Image (cartoon, rainbow, N blue to C red; front, side):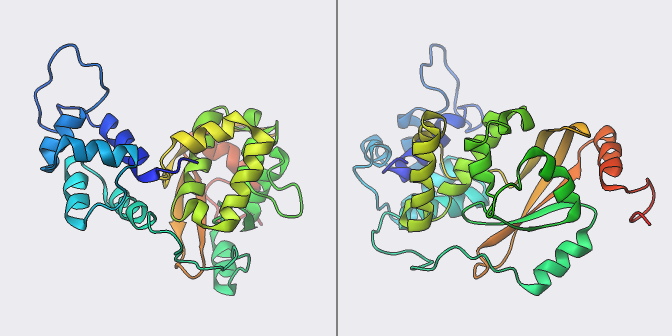
Length: 282
């Protein structure tokens, strides 16, 4: 993991914003993807030397006013703005919002009841270590044949990076792997000793496919999207997913998967035993 997450995030976002989108003229012979540092400095009203110091990690404590100006110039979404502020706060050593608390593996009764109400939808509850804590039967029918639920404490990140079946299960493995690393880096990252231990474990067991992402990716996973899954019984499925965060004290989130097309909907109905037009099988 980079020791300059703030600088990495700013650089990657700068490179993702085109001059045209930022309202700047686009000239020929541009070597830099996205905005140049000089252009970002002009838009944010700071010096190019200061932008350079931030990206290189030589200044890690910008003021709130500078953060706001950079966020405006980089056209950050609300979620990206929150992440930027957390990265700036994370530069202060010795403090974590979670203190010494370990990962929460307890599932509240109302959350279990919610999962039951979601049947037969494929939904899974995970904590900040990507450990699978509970799931619907619909998710079990989807994930169990893939090997995703193997072991006493199944983990999405461990499956993606250490189980050879993962690359078959996920045709777009690189995208799935990116999101798993970004999720681990989101929030406290290595400041959390439990997350740091998992990062070290996966760095040793997986090597460059994990370590390279740890150094290069910002910690901002996609909260929704479409993932392709190859199921041994149902074939290839396109699943739209939504990530629903529980309150901070829970330190958990719910991922709900829905069919992204008619073929996937029909395949999921066969998988779960649900008749088209019926709420549940009888």
